Image (cartoon, rainbow, N blue to C red; front, top):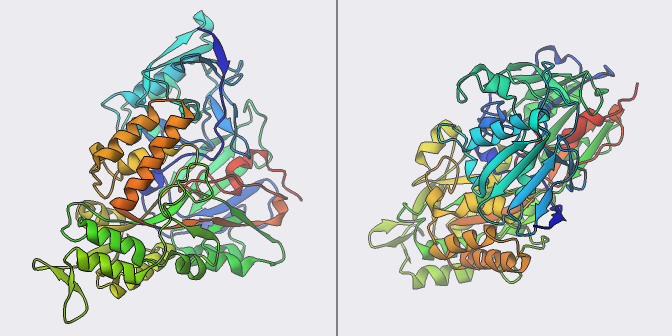
Length: 535
């Protein structure tokens, strides 16, 4: 086989996993140590925390984990570049073999050498049926992985079942040390909370529900970070996060648009806007007699006023969403936009047999057009979207009863109750759409939350991931977007820009195009190891 250079995938790091992040208590870091002036320290406020810190269970699978490195990583423009690999991989002409030469002299933070055997261990463990990794379908194309190079073990070869175009993006996945993680229970061992990696930072302590504390890895292969102490304060409540930032307890924070705008122009603070593929949607469960009705789904799709949500909820920091792909993406299917049209919504409902009752709410065959709509407690953006959606739905004669709850409350109800959820992954259309729409993933945690079941979409999802021909892939994702117009199992509402406010002493920072999973791995601190703090 002749080899060809890997094509870098533009866009941003993938991840729909934010749906699976556990909601945290809204406590702040005790004492705020490091915030407000210590040159070698930084404390930032984020909204969620992971369930685990093990990459074998999904932590950091899209990069920027701080503790670990992948074979590849992303630069500021989201182009792939080498990390634990010495170069970008060589790819066979048939697109089914990826060969990586490894960087020499890399060590884990416990001093043990990193080798190809650790890479093999990581990928094989994730694919093991006994491993509780909800994202293992992302590696469906992987047939086998082997270490080469004799005793040096300096080469890794991946063999694929089919030519999966975005496979190189999957190799930003963090590598775990076999000599540590391989000697304990992968799902519950101490490595899940006290990890060891090759990354720029070492974990000092994880105070669950409160903060993640890191210290610089002095032997990091990329050079010791100038920010020696880095803390992620887990503060669920948006208002509390903003208050802590203003008081100097935080050096930076992610904030919703309405709160971030209060810091614009403030002395000593800089506001950063990151473009994203992050969307908000309402799930329309197939197993609910109301939301599973195609007429109801199609009516809601045009009854909702997306532009009003962008203007009034996002303060213009975003755009209308008609599906998982933003309208300015090369993968967006032109002509699938749905304009706000209340009269059309009413016609659809009339034609589908949903007639208005005395109270204005429609009925059909004795079933009232009413359903619960849940949103995550403490999330103001989701609350505002849910209330606006319910208001628009009511004008068409559909009642969405808005309720707040934690994921522990919401998850068991997702088969029949609607949820104001989020997702979005820009690196490749397969990354988000497969887990969102594939029928066989219905009921698998936060995958396919609406239990969407459309054979045409299932086929297109397979067609899109089992070829590296871009034209064929574009045709497959065009099919999916058109099918979502005919039978929308979700009402997509907005794509949201991410806003961050950071102390100016850290200089001019950058952001990447971001997925739904923001704040933890994204934000201006995506490359905190490269920051050059001012005195």
